[in-house]
Length: 391
Image (cartoon, rainbow, N blue to C red; front, top):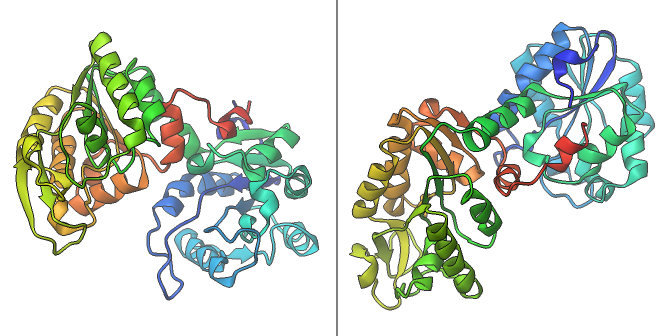
């Protein structure tokens, strides 16, 4: 896989796949620009080297329809302000109008193509759609780690048609941090895995047993593991069909001598609501009909001890329903602990990163990955299709 610095880009049309699928306000303005900010180094380097920069991305899930609220025009305007340069908004991503805008470009200029997902062919990895996009440029750069686990036309279709292609600076950085944290970590390596479901993370957990020294499980997914060990968890969210799988994973962890830590107490509530009656109870004392919505203070202390001497920490998924203040304490406490550690700390997933931002600790995390699904796919030990296509 080539890197950006290996490409000769001066005067060339460079198609850059980014992930600018950013949250928008009701007024149609960018609400969170993290994904735009992380792509700026690649865009600026290309501009410094006098490339003609053609940016392509998707926004939302318009499912092949040209829905105005998913237009990238506000994003192009926002990017122009960050670059202090004009960004020409193409009225389409393929066809005569897009071709005309690109043909008029001069070196050092930026064009943003309209939403790729206005065409279902993007998601379907349609070869003709990929060929039309590829025809706009002479070189291709993938700087969209967050969508590199998807076999879409702009991610795998285009690079298969182009000989001059490379990873952007963000993609390169993401892969480097994953290598440092999971493939060649300083030990002890502690993984913290939370979130709502075991089902989406079971394969990652199984693969991580061969990598980690300790594993902390929290969030709603911990309920499935607790129930698999015979605990009554009331009305807590449980994936009944995965109880045997959860038990097998814990047995395998013991066989591989990987210590797994589950909550010892929780904040339980009578219903899933911010104003619900709630109390701290041990996992043996969750009242019938109540649900565990956060880890309790004893669990926090236990997990802090587990993290105390860690040299590497990988975190994916919150410890509870952090979006409700009453159930955010556990996740916030773990965020403070990870931030204060002397470990290399890498977080992945939208919820994890949102929780860290809420805790005010974003600046104290070594690296916050921009990709949730892509991060998990790497944790599963798989190659990302978008990365494989650059070979």
